[in-house]
Length: 262
Image (cartoon, rainbow, N blue to C red; front, side, top):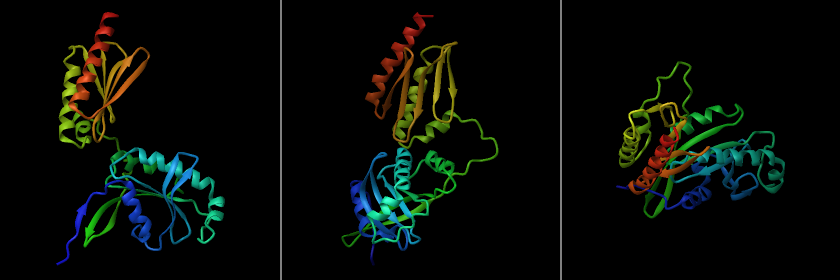
């Protein structure tokens, strides 16, 4: 009985190699025009493809969930869209239809709700699809299987206000959830006059009538700590107990300085 083993790619290049060599894993009739194509709008485009209707396709790959890939893909899309005529001349052996707007395909193991919402806000003529993947190994051969992830359509009814629990549950790692909870409690314990404001992306803290002194913003693999220093905020990304201990001293310092100046 044949079995398939699910494995993780070592890096993005490994996943790119598989798609480059087997382009129809993306969809039937799909072709790859170029890989690591240099653009002047944001670096190198992972894969430039062509679907069976003659429409060019910008493919951006990640082997971890990455909200930044959406903006990166939009930069590459803009470059391709602005250079369709040149690209048609660059690849004369392919039947590129320069009258069609290019598509965007994002490929990653998973996508955050933020990305699933953001893709609904682009122009109606720009088609963006999200594809999670499974990398399988059988008899020494590797193949990739895609699953299209639907967007999150914004609701027309009012949403319930975000809660602290919503922010904590946005974090994927259990130990980071606990660390974020510890960070929130730590700021509250600085003083009974510390007030919080919960938004969909962070918890902001102020002291009495002060401006927002601290922000704690959850991420999938950690959380951000931003502290007000002078007229600007200094931020750091926290993914370990050690990093949080370093940030705690900054929070205490800023808070004590602000109290003294009141």
